[in-house]
Length: 197
Image 1: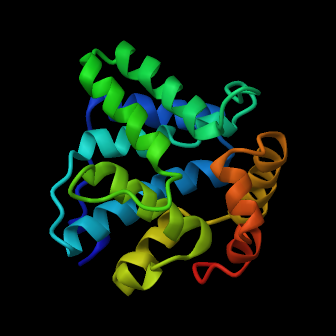
Image 2: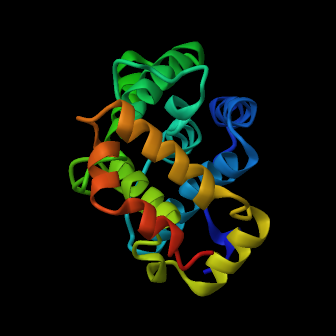
């Protein structure tokens, strides 16, 4: 498997979601969002998981928008805030209410400990791929050549430092959130030891 073998959808919604991510994220977080989709697509291909590429791509681009100052909520965890932004974005893209809700669910579930693939393949893939990219979990399940090509095209830049600060801030301000649980469970140390760096 090579980078060129990956399914990368090109629809108005996908282009719009990438534009939104580029507008509100730092270069490190933007590249993380792109890599999240690419790791998910590579894993799905290698494990024969059928998925909705447009839904997963849009959700990947928008999954961390709740970390941006413009969308950071003081009342809900960042993944919920990002899910609501995605719902509104997808309404503007003309998606049905059911499809908008799916995008919101996929984004919220990316912070779960595990999302069963049979129940939600896109949620499963985004939860898995963000874990790969942030903490290095199961990165050996992506072919080495794909890892090399993706990291060459979308380098990690300062993602370890930036995301460590973001997750610690979210955890401190929202003590009942998944972010707080991950921080108390040692996520910052795992981020700094990510084998992708």
